[in-house]
Length: 145
Image (tube, rainbow, N blue to C red; front, side, top):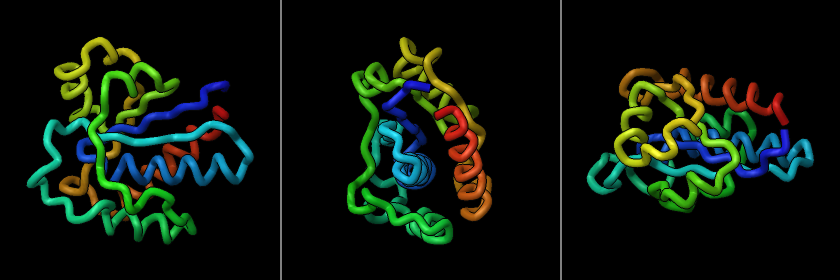
């Protein structure tokens, strides 16, 4: 696969998509690949959403368990833009049930470009289960590179 710019999307760009980004970039660097991932959120507002700080403590724990030191843990969540969707080679939204309607409403022109995974948020699954799912999905994605 010649794709070099991978965009991971979740709701708040705080836990799932950030973990996927860090895991992908860790694998890519280990393998000497030029492909890199970044992540964004689909929420229209990141204020008063319950997230504390720049990066989820749950994500930090999961990444530490896998021996991955996050590179962007100090950066705050960011909302995705149409330009980022357009310019990405691969776009993956972490939870189809929630993210497909959000994309259809906000960015209908890109809805067909998105690959969907099934990694629920922490209100539906424990941090360990979600972390394991994200790790497994990213490991599977790496087989295409």
